[in-house]
Length: 156
Image (cartoon, rainbow, N blue to C red; front, side, top):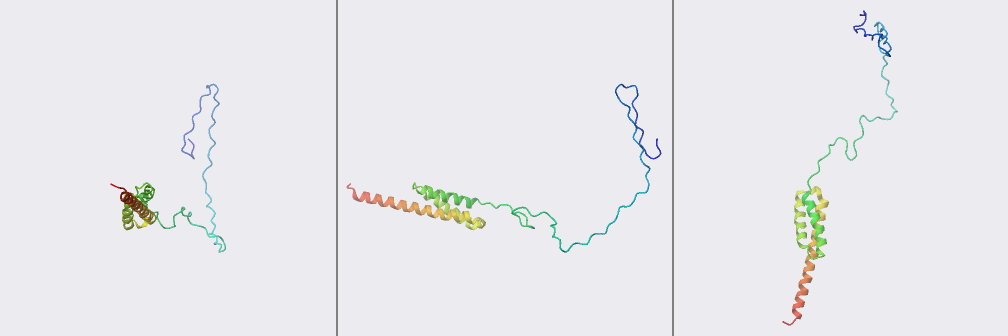
């Protein structure tokens, strides 16, 4: 064993192996001596005219710094009001829009009290629901007047 290291010597293969060159032992390591201390440099004075550096990465798109994202609130009544309101206008053209329009108005007023953050959807549901109910009532009034006029003019 060498005096400076605790590593055992590497066994050398026998010279009788065909085609295998002998392995040479690694060179001896230099004796440890005094190590020079790292160079010390005083910190540089900050430049008052340099650009300010951001300490962190910019916030993700859509998030203000310092605020956590908020979970989406449920909007079931508002969505129901909007869908049935639009359906009431379409179905009013076929004289079937009265009941979807009433459902849109009822769910729209419920959503107005329970889901004020979803104003766009429940307001759309209210407006289209009232329009659907109005078209259905006007259409129904025309049908009733036509039936009355038809029966009044006929001879039973």
